[in-house]
Image (cartoon, rainbow, N blue to C red; front, side):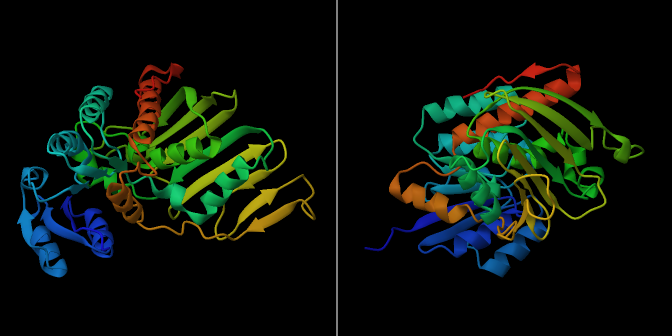
Length: 336
């Protein structure tokens, strides 16, 4: 028996175009409507993908009774109101990270979700990387021994995104919320536990002289529930290609991600204690979580990334920013 047709709306056609392509590749899924504030882009994307409806008002999608799934790929400061509207009109939601910008918004979304039956997921895609999935499996099997330290850094020379793009025009922006969040979620997944407390600091050296008034680089240190330590640096300033650094230090083995091959250490002898790992990295594309999300909607199950993951990782992000502002160690206030 064929799956019933699922109609989708996509709000925001930057990264949203990748969502659109992914939806169109899934059997019995139709992108019914698209929305963007840029009318030129809206018309071009609509023509390119033969979309029936083009809107500049997102409510034409969230309030459409024929649409059951919405991808929210708009500017970060628009996510909150669009999520709330989608929940109140019984839409399942894929939202680009960050889902929200402030703790009170997170609490409001969780309250709305508690009164609904919708699924929500977010595009935290590093769990889908074949290389990182291997590391998760090794951790679950205990191959690292006791993990006592883990590091995950988001490093990418995209300074223009905050000095020239829409992010720099927002009333508030934190690079961790858009970049480091991927590594924080990945480390939570690999560790299988939560971060208890953080301390953090930032610098604005790379953006001095621009209109951007927030740190371009933030480094956070963690304490995990087990007592292990951790680190996450988010920087949009380094002169290098995009890279997700993941280093896992255990009593039996150490993993160090690198390009093209990662390394696995079992001791300090370079002649015999180092092995290469050539499992594909990153091996993923924007939109790769959508087939799994649609399958969950059809079968009434929870997605790989659900509201618990979204708001656990956002709780850590909020604590990091509080630590940057207060210059104090901050206990993570888990919102869920």
